[in-house]
Length: 309
Length: 270
Image (cartoon, rainbow over all chains, first blue to last red; front, side, top):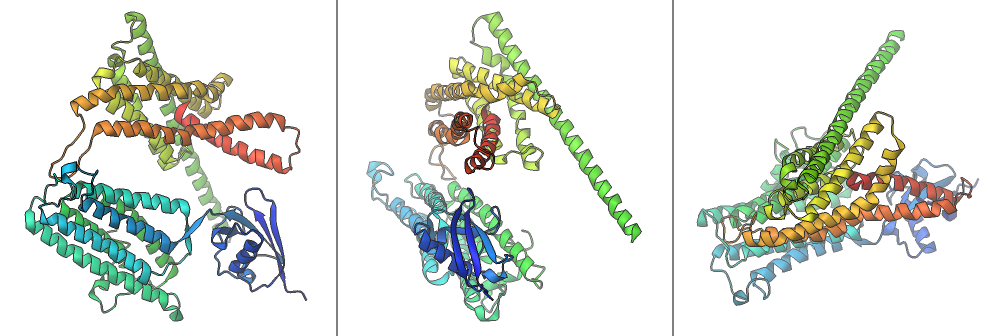
């Protein structure tokens, strides 16, 4: 008995047949189909392909096996071109290197930003230097995490998204760097006390954020024990897991709130608020996914702000 | 068994009744809203005509209708609410952007910068808006009452071809005329140094607004318009193709998109 399946790939928009694959092993994955498709159409590398069983349905993951899908002996799939894709690591790298360098341009008062006589001068305020150190440290930490710590799930992201994200991060960092390093910058109203307290909170939140990222990457790496949700460990920073599903976002918000207090700069506060809104959306999505997947998920946990949100 | 079936149908009936009363209520509200807005813009049109006939000039016309204009244009914010709760099938963002740009023109340009109120460009966009809104709201009203006169439908889909560019010209010229007054007075602006380490220059903000007319209006209005004109020309030559042919399938899908775009262009300008 011929156990092989046939796969027919149609264009999702025009419904014309793009390829017909004969004699496909039933236990081959969607990833295999994508590679075969790529051989016929070298322009569409696998990361760019979206294959679905229904023209308007969700795309099939690469790991899915043909046999487990609800198809007969001939599987009909619909193809959509996702556009040029870039790996997540590249995306994160581009998003974080920009703010790092742009802020430094403003800190060193490169010519043409402020008036000519201020070029390459430095601010008399200590807080400006501290802010630069904090900001640079934050983005350096992010870059290091991108290279060594994070384990990304999907392979890639469309080109349009990376352009949009880079514009957002780079634009905002230029805007807030402009004011903090401006010759007419006004230091915080409560002076050194405000700056020092804010720095302490900044340091705590950065350490917390790092601990959470480490703990999440260990969870990902430990595939032998199946899928589990993150739990608090011996590290006190991870104890926030008792209360929230996404403490990394909580700590990130804390970082930016403390940075706004440290610099007392309205554009930083605006950036913090927008970041908080976006991270809340992400955290709520993640929280919902956890609750749906794990029946024993702790009921006391909320998405991002302990006991509140 | 029988009782649970009965319960099921009773519950279904209750749900259907709830849906019916809900949709009757929403239709009633929408009809009232659209009638009220048509009436409001008609009142504006009458007031403008009366002023012009009486005084023979457009100077002082804006002042005389400013309050009514502010009221009815601001009330249009309600439409964003309609989209948000789903009783009107349009994107919240599209409607939001359109209403906000109108409110911006009324409150932050025309009403607050007195020196441009006698400019011809202001009268231009006022006239365009009035005709547009009367057409739009009366179209919605008739549609809700299930009695759409052909003229209203024709007006809705054709007026914008002339009104849209005229409106854009009027608005842009008005903002341009306002620029020197904004610069001189430094209104709505904040300079360094200040406690919150932020600055805002309304003059440059207006310039950015003027520049943003190009991408915004292009994506929201021009692109769908071009597609519409393209298909209406090509449709006429391809009517002989059979229903099932690939081209016919494509035409049908483009037509669907075009009709969707018409409603979105017309949302915004016509």
